[in-house]
Image 1 (spheres, rainbow, N blue to C red):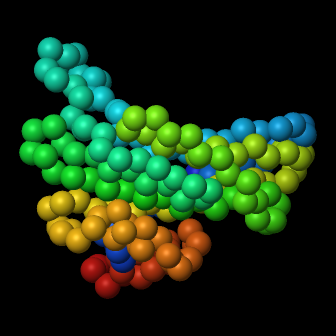
Image 2 (cartoon, rainbow, N blue to C red):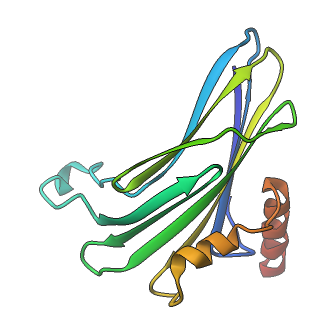
Length: 171
């Protein structure tokens, strides 16, 4: 299996980040299951000397999703800053779009999953764009704001080019 990945945080729109995975079965054909998540349940436990401190910094507030779209709202447990994010997925197999996404929700986490028929030499491409906003800079309805950020934004390459152009104007 050949796996290529690319990701960036947009310099063109500070609310956007995107990633792309290309998966190519090299010497087999078989079903492939892919899942993506917005996860507000992560904990900070990687440093031994901080193990005695509270490692859970986020409190889940709302989450949901349907098809290729999902969203999550959490707040920080000390400053009560709300963080809202939404994601949009795109999946193709050998450049043919797939639209069969499933969504499951647990408290503080949204999983989007899809099963595809992996074919030898045929590339599966998953693109995920995430829009984020916090209560520090966005006073309006943040769920609507982040969902609106994902409308009509184009594919990974378009977003990447816009970000690269914005970087070019900085340097």
